[in-house]
Length: 424
Image 1: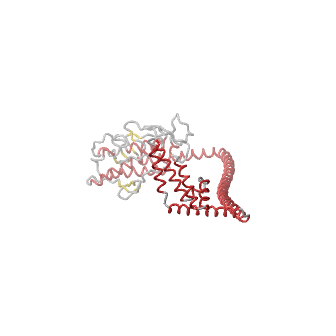
Image 2: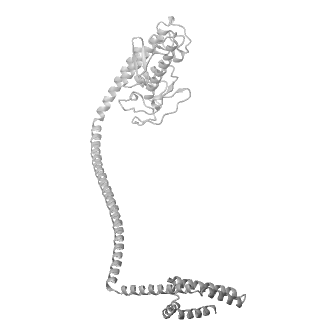
Image 3: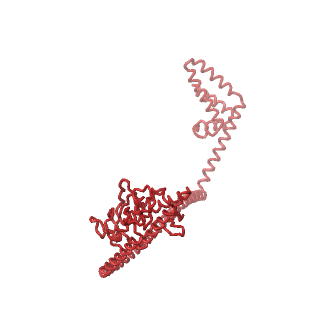
């Protein structure tokens, strides 16, 4: 009822304003959902109508009289003439806007403008296509780069494979040449083996004879028989459990050096070193610690080349310490000599007995105190073991060396053969 009353009142006002204004109002009423949204006056009217409708619905529950009174107050506020003038101005502005809009629509029907718009759309589509094409070209370039890298890698692999095949062919040819040379060498060896055997036996016999002469020259004796030892009645008394002599000079055990004359010890060590040098020279054996003869006596050098004198001086403590170090290295040389022959060494402090035992074994083929215990190159002329009689269970063609044999109780290990140096 409120909306109908407001419409009736608006129609009366339009008759007062004139026909043109009434036409505008009719246009406003016919296009309430269209052009009225673009006019401030229509927005205001719609707002007022909506607020009045909401207020009427809220007050309908209270009383119909209160709703009618509020409508009359609202219409009374809209009654002044200046308000209707503003409404007329807004309506004129709406009509002008509609006319301009119609003019724009007519201009849009022009073929030139349509062509320009279509050209613009085509240019936009073309630009988008060019951008997409650039992206695709970049992707294609990246793919080509990866393909090129893969091809280069494949070329490198092929080249490496060709080189390997070439090296393999070269190795096969070298192997064939070596096999041919080996066959020829075997044939030559089979032809020369009898002669080499004769020469080896002659060399062995000659070495044994020379070692026998060395044994006879130095005359090492380990017994205390007066017939064997000259001047035994005039020898100095000592506490040695066994009296060993080299020539006519008594050389005690290395653990029994105190209590003996310095001149006797110096002479005994000098003769021992001289005999050991001759044995190594005949057998072509190289000792780990080099020996040398000086005017004052013998010297032995350490692995660093430091010379140690084998001259005894009981009154000087430093000289005694150097003598102990020198005798230790001398015992290691003796252990090396016996180890190269495949023989263990027990009680190394008996220097003369150890050297005499291995020398007699090499010179006369005697079994000695301890026979050969582990394999050595028995058939090689460059090895001192070729002068030995190999053990029964070991063939004479054995060349490979077994694992080191553990030392027995109270036995000095073979440091040279096992590659371990005994600490001072």
